[in-house]
Amino acid sequence: MSSSLPPSLLAHVSRLIETWMGLFFPPERWTDLERKLHAVAPALGCADAEACARLLTAVSVSQQQLDVLATYLTVGETYFFREPRSLEVLEQRILPELIHCRRGVDQHLRLWSAACCTGEEAYSLAIILHRLIPNLSEWKTTLLATDLSPRFLRKAQDGVYGQWSFRSVPAAVQERYFQQTAGGHYLIKSTLKNMVSFAQLNLATENYPSPGNNTIDMDVIFCRNVLIYFTAERIKRVLERFYHALVDGGWLVVSPVESAFVMDSPFTPVQFPGVTLFRKDLDQRATRAPLAPVIAPETRELRETPPLVLAADGEEPSASFSDCVPLGADGALLDNAPAQEPLAPSPLTPGTTLHPYEEASALYARGHYAEVIEKLSTFQWEAEQAPCARPREQAMAVLARSYANQGRLTEAQTWCERALAVNKFDAGLHYLRATILLECGQEGEARLSLTRALYLDQHFVLAHVALGNLAVQRKDAKEARKHFANALTLLHHYQPEDILPESDGMSAGKLAQIIADMSERI
Image 1 (cartoon, rainbow, N blue to C red):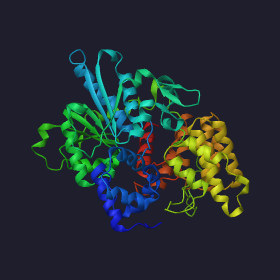
Image 2: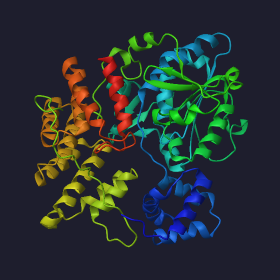
Image 3: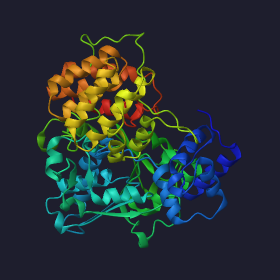
Image 4: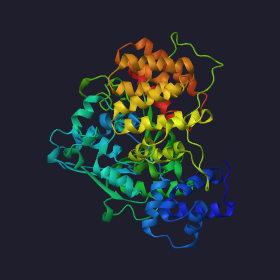
């Protein structure tokens, strides 16, 4: 889809958004920007994307309008213990050293989850603190969580999550720190919930660090998967403010794909196995040539320590709802196998009459699962003619995912089966069925579905990874290594930033890191 709005108008809107929020939409992303303007238009009282763009460029935008805009422009994809290697380093190395130095003297810790989205990262940090400090009530801990979007913050403060937010979390952790609600969701327990303070903060502004918003004297700042949306100049200014917000010796944690942005900054890169973190080290600043990463001492000990984040209470990591799934019978790869097509909605353009599937997909992307169910529950499925079979099948899949996100697994499985009845040769549908079956505890049947998915498409990366995860659970190291090796081979054909089919937003680079981390533990 090419952009239909005047380039000058899109350029003006792009500049304004970068000024207001720091979010950068270069010309190659103007189609995406137009799509987002079309989505936000009704919420701002506009008829279409062009009317929305002209509103933003013609008047002084209120804070309320900016809050609405932020909801549609920011990415809400996250889950508990995402990018686990940096969390393991925090739990096994950084926090234990801080706790040891301050125990009995000045028992305080200050952590900041910047751009916390819907709160999963902040609560993951709370769980780590709770596990590390038995007498936590005797410590003064600050766990600040900030985000640009008020809607994300409201969800974070509610502390209620669907099963897919736990895709990397073993059942023991989920049972210990969450309680299941009547609707099948999971509520964070009050002990953890009360540890986190949520507040709105725009990283593009200059109102931090400041005592007024409690963004000073931090021991650790997490800011992951945010810098990638900023310009180089904006990144530089944000990093400078983070540097001043940290105590001397404090740590900044970014995502692996953002590490290169921090190399040419006042921070000292410190390399741990599988991840690089950044330390505020004042005595290094005077000799600030580009530094090679410092190798953290005793890294061998970290490699051999059982991961506390992913395997609590001595349990093996459990299969996840989205990250788990097989290989072909002999593990061979077909060089000429057709690549899988993602189940993605057609691009939305102003004035387009949308198929119900496209409307439902737009709602699903914003996390409005109840609205998806409401919209599609009255759809006349059998009235669709053969040329529309593909949208019908995709709509059923979106409906199944929405039920799954609400913990209604019986309905999710029913609609997935209906979609497969329409098209038995869709590898993505067999993968979806497998993830639902895994949630229902039907591992044997799930493995059969994953095998079918790979029979139809042996280039299906997530299916390879899932069977590797299941092999880990069975303590079958040989089979797990085979599956993971095939997945890594396939990932070489992607760019690191490419989003993988059926992954709910996971990039190829991130999955490769997860596989490498898991392979080390086999």
